[in-house]
Amino acid sequence: MSVVVASRRAAPFLVAAAGFFLLTLPHAQAQWWKRAPVDFESCADAAEKSPTKAEKTAALADCNAKFAGRRKPGGGYSYYDFLQDRSFDIAGPNPTPEEQKKIDEAYTAYLARERRNNEAAQATARQQRERQEQQAQQLQQLQQVALRTDVARVPLPVERPKVQQTVGQRKGAPCTKGAFSCEWPRLSESLNDLKKLFSPTPNKPAKKG
Image (cartoon, rainbow, N blue to C red; front, side):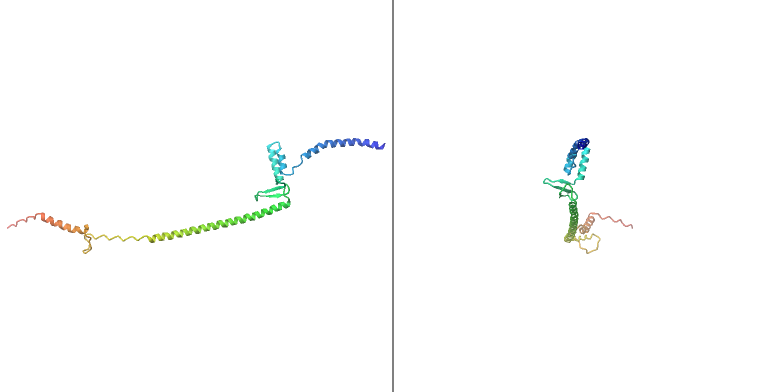
């Protein structure tokens, strides 16, 4: 009798508990279907279902901030480091501390390699510039030597002959035959003789007694 009474008293509590379980079951199922994304791809798929473009953009940005890795076709994930322009294989959607340490060490080696390459490029450019300057100096020296050689080959100008002395210069000076300066005195004397022949002699006036 006491057992039956206890069961009856417990019956309302059992019914209430069963009703509560039935009410909470759909909610639990809904939470299972809406579980959190496990990687970037699943997060992006959920973001694509956003009702507005602004919400979609914000959701994709959130996915990119949460997950650094991307799925690989053959399985696993890869992490792209834009500072090194290089991808690294990782086990999960985000690098583990050990994987991140290796990525950082690779970046340090990358910086050292870039520094050495820059120094080598600068040294090569400096050597090329010095070589060009030396070639320019050599070319200038060759041009100067060629100029001096050309100047030495040019013959000296012949001294101009002295002008023959004209009438009135000192006697005994050489005179070129046929030159006007030499023939003119003789021609002048001949003309004077002819004038004397054809000119009458003036009559002298008679003397008064």
